[in-house]
Image (tube, rainbow, N blue to C red; front, side):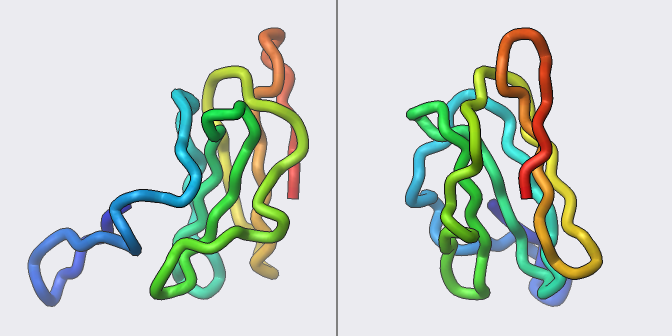
Length: 102
């Protein structure tokens, strides 16, 4: 993940180039937390959903790191409440059923 640094006039990495968990083919969900740092949720290679939060210097597990259910395909959508709680919807089966996790 990268963010634009207007003062430097260039894109810069947010944390290391590689995440600790390996994303699969599902499209990730990305949101900005109340602290201004990004949160990312994605299906990992084992089809489980993983959530990581950038703490200013490294990507760390958000909560338990694993969301309930498996992601079969599709996209993960994210939002953050005004109190900073991330909400995630994800496709959990081939019928297009979505589940809200927090």
